[in-house]
Image (cartoon, rainbow, N blue to C red):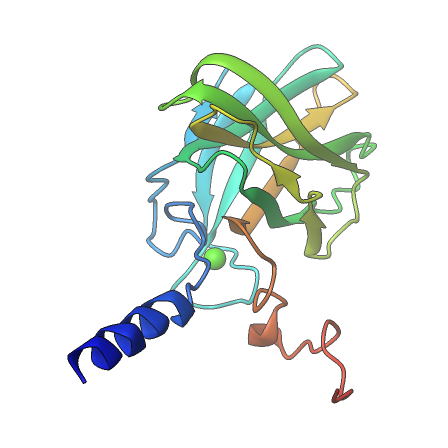
Length: 205
Ligand SMILES: [Ca+2]
């Protein structure tokens, strides 16, 4: 009987569901003036917390990229470094908002990608992961998602990167970013919060 109990316990352990989690810290910017977890490259502008939440939640906000450059063809970006498992596939996704400012020509893009690093803390040899580049969709929260990409053997961390590129000098692009995700799955991340059911069907096997 003892042997049977042990066998059943082992089966239960093996078959217990492992829920994929968002590996990012502070992905939804829920605390006012709080950008914990994110590193902002300040060469071409600055990052700030915006009270404009993707779902208009009064108790959450977003990350804003404030471009401040006098030359064209410039980037600014935010990033976060996370630990990964070699061989595991990862996917990153985010929502971005590009305000329709009549005073600017709106020539720019949003780039979303991640890179793998051989050492923890995004140090050592790096290897490019997937990249998605999108033209601005004005005044509409827009979803961006990378391809699934496996972490190379021997690699320990990944840098999740979201950038705003501006092609015209002296134009105050203010792209906003919210609800970022870096995980092993996209399941259960299809905006039910806003009533969307587009990723689901009524088909039953
Ligand atoms: Ca938010």
